[in-house]
Image (cartoon, rainbow, N blue to C red; front, side, top):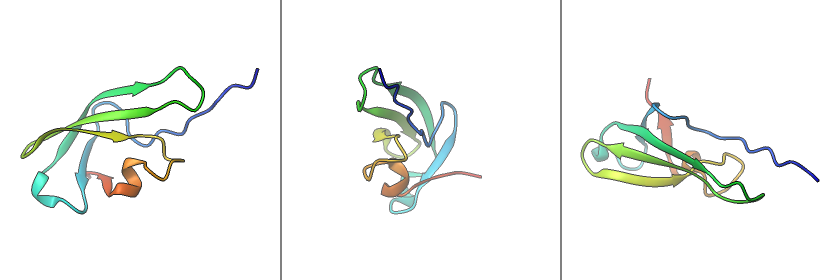
Length: 75
């Protein structure tokens, strides 16, 4: 049996900004979920001050990862 290794971008508690949506304000990762099924989803839920809760893919190897969508860690 081959074990899958996922490379995750964000972790619980990290603060982020969205490059395409600065009006959202600073967001904080409030939940991280990873499927136990190989190839399954890895997602993060982020609470933004100005728009509320948003959900993003968190697998950096996916073209749909939140990093590629414009999320960056806030310094």
